[in-house]
Length: 99
Image 1 (cartoon, rainbow, N blue to C red):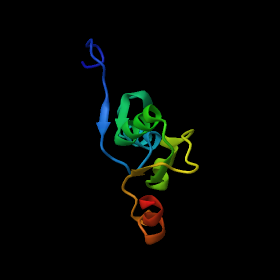
Image 2 (tube, one colour):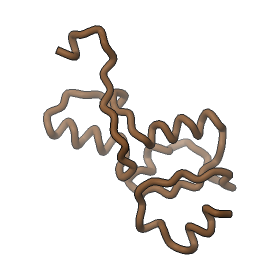
Image 3 (cartoon, rainbow, N blue to C red):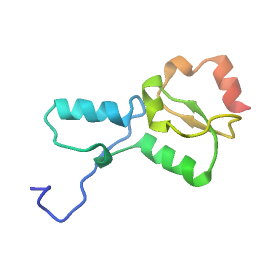
Image 4 (cartoon, rainbow, N blue to C red):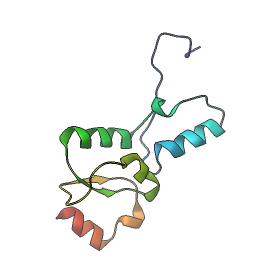
């Protein structure tokens, strides 16, 4: 019924553990008929903000989330994006982020 209604459909999540592409694969395997552009994540919001502010982030996110930041410059970071990534939360990385 939603598909036939005059509304925009979005699947929204606050996950930072996996990329939009991984979410799409998981949802379609569960029987959802959706397109990648119908998924909006907190990583999508972060990427949009990075592009708007034209900053270069240090990405403290899970490796599976990195594809959502393809094309975003990360050399000489002047911002930090933090997601669920316990393997990256160690002294060296936290020191880089604070600097």
